[in-house]
Image (cartoon, rainbow, N blue to C red):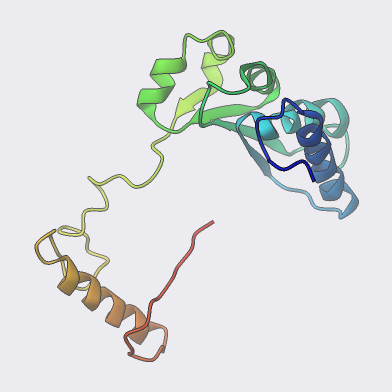
Length: 169
């Protein structure tokens, strides 16, 4: 009802949401191994968990905090860094770029840069043994068509020219 999600300097909404998420986990008797939070808007989970839930039946849960953009909410990010068990960011390069920031520097021993996306050295369609036909940028249409047909066959789908959407989330 406020007309926007971000940019209002109304951080109480996000704190309330984070507390509600933790309470939902507790009340529904979930016992996650890891709670993974992203950026300042979910940063309160780190300290709320440690201050209010770490002595509950969720005591073995660990909190991982990922920084996508340190330009926003550095105070919350710094506080989450204090309370999280491990912290990551979107690439080894960005982790080096921000490692000296006041919110990060005291916690460098638990801060890691993990490449966001795929590693093209490993997942190269020309050398990938998991696809039926290797391809390059010149033969991408043929290669992807062969991969789609193989996927349709493997899962017993009709061999039709319709989009196939896969999501890992």
